[in-house]
Amino acid sequence: MKKFEEQLIKEVEALKSLQPGERKGNVGWESPSNIAFVKYWGKYPRQIPANASLSLTLSKAVTRTRAAYNYDPKREKPVVQFEFEGQRKGDFTARIEKYLSGLDEFMPWIRHTDFSISSENTFPHSSGIASSASAMSAMALCLCDIEQEIYRQEYPGDFFRRASFLARLGSGSASRSLYGKMAEWGITASCKDSSDEFAIPVPEIHDAFMDMKDSILIIESGKKRVSSSLGHDLMRSNPYSKLRFEAAEENMQQLCNVMQNGDLGGFIDIMENEALSLHAMMMTSSPGYVLMQPNSLEAIHRIREFRSRTGLAIGFTLDAGANVHVIYPGEQAESIRKFIDQELKELCEHGAIIHDEMGSGPKRI
Ligand code: DP6
Image (cartoon, rainbow, N blue to C red; front, top):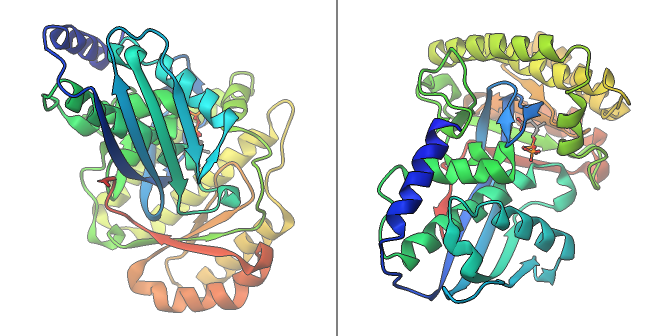
């Protein structure tokens, strides 16, 4: 068993001696999505990542989750009701139920609690923004608050670290949404406090990266064609996976260096290499997937051409889909936004672009 997990299980023992306080109540959290610069792609059982990853926490793309709870130690079959944007959603409810039952060893009170949860996103579900990251981190934070209310005790350790651990069990990338600015998850030689069990805030970020922008080009809306779980699974048999995990660690170490010394050019090289490597992994899996669309490629060519023409620090990254995240520093935003409107907007479905930026992390609501 992993170290932090062991510690959490010991803490559960300590809770047993406490008399529950509140039995009913309401909590709420707003939690952001994130976009990875070094990608998490490939995992082992219990959501242990095959390589470390690093992401930018977004500001506007958030999930707001409110949870009403009713705890009764005599209850054995809790009822979970889940509404997404005002509508009951059966598939989401099943996912939440599965998630909650998987947390039994860390939060045994869950099995005696009814939940009525409502959740909404500030971004369209079809935009390709990682909604599981914001949704599962908001959910984990609500659970941590409910526990504090039930036992009338503030969590004695690092509240966000534990929430990150719990969010990870729901979705790997969600572990990184617990902190503002940038977060790192997974053991890497470049960060001494790194862990596979939870994410941590990136400790040293040069001023050059402190106002990062992310303009998301919606090349194709609609449901993801390949789920992340399938993608992670494909890495088990991908003939290049071992090399990919080594390359990710190499990129992680280099990214941490440029993050400290403010080398925007070096940063862009690593970020783009990571995005293209992720897509290369999908193409070389069996079956192989081509997730980019012609307009994704056209956007990439135009971004690179604009960069070499102007010398501005603009780069791209992609998740496992066709939409292109255009990444640039705030101080160059004026000229870059003009370029986006004039040359990239026409490549987007109905001209749709979501302009987001570095955010400050989750908030209670
Ligand atoms: C391409 O976190 O969605 O966005 O752990 O199975 O829920 P699960 O996967 P998920 O994978 C994210 C993959 C990615 C890269 C990243 O965010 O690092």
